[in-house]
Image (cartoon, rainbow, N blue to C red; front, side, top):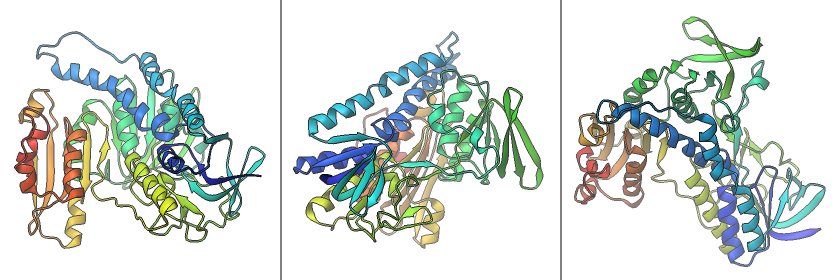
Length: 448
């Protein structure tokens, strides 16, 4: 039986960071994944999605500037855009294989499961380890409805060779917002069926309200307070049935249904009970050091840990914490202060720190600077009708408690507010900073 200092289950961001750090310390490592090496972000999430967004950004820019010095018709060529995406994603698994070989990491393809508290079985072999890191990411939450097998995942959407004419998205969060913008700009008829009372519930409601007209202008149909009850075949297409609060039931005909109703840690195939790894309500039971409370050999990081926000930078941060605890003893704890979050609609919407509602619940005394500002130069020069901000500042300390942005450059400028929150910069510190002008960052002083 092969023995390792560390076995890593999964090959995404958390796995890659942890492997690099423990190998640098001389540990023997094995990595296991039943999918192509590279993980969700590089292959099925952030990076390929953003490659596709580049296409719609170009289309949207041309549409906004029509009549302002730009002429001619542009359209998304979906197969070519997908080929552009694959120019990044296709080489990733082989690059990872080469990296593991260069580092001296043993790489295994197959579905991993615990064979004992200190061993993992894969592809007919059993590997023993001093420590095991669960970095399996997340998967779609089961919908629990008839016809669920007819519903495609976000993974499948990112591999579509041709774009269906009619698309229904179940859910109204990040994935639904991003994919609806992309698909609509590429020519599809898009419907969002959202169980919650509003779209993008993780973002400030005022800013979502400012962004919503962009959905409407694209012809995207949004049905909130709507619970999908069944999906069934209808000739060559599909029929989605849903119930609505205080309204008649809804039926939508389409060619593709996408699951965008949330994700949870992907743990189902691991046989955690054999590994004596405690789990409750589908989540690993971890201590403050990201270590299993029931099996101290086992750690978790990223979406599989389910502790911090489900974002790629959190996966990287978790992995560094786990690596330090493995190498130096369990003393480090993750710190999720000032982690920005972005929905890459066009334009994007972004947030960091406390929401206004959470700040009020906390009892803090703070001032709110909020405005819809499409007349500011940053928006005017791009002919962008959506631009606005909401910034929360502690009255006593002058610290930034939260920042919420929508419009051009929101995905970049939010990082400066994240820097302020994480490192204790005050509103006065930000106001006294001289940013390059005219840039999105140069608006920060006016947002405070």
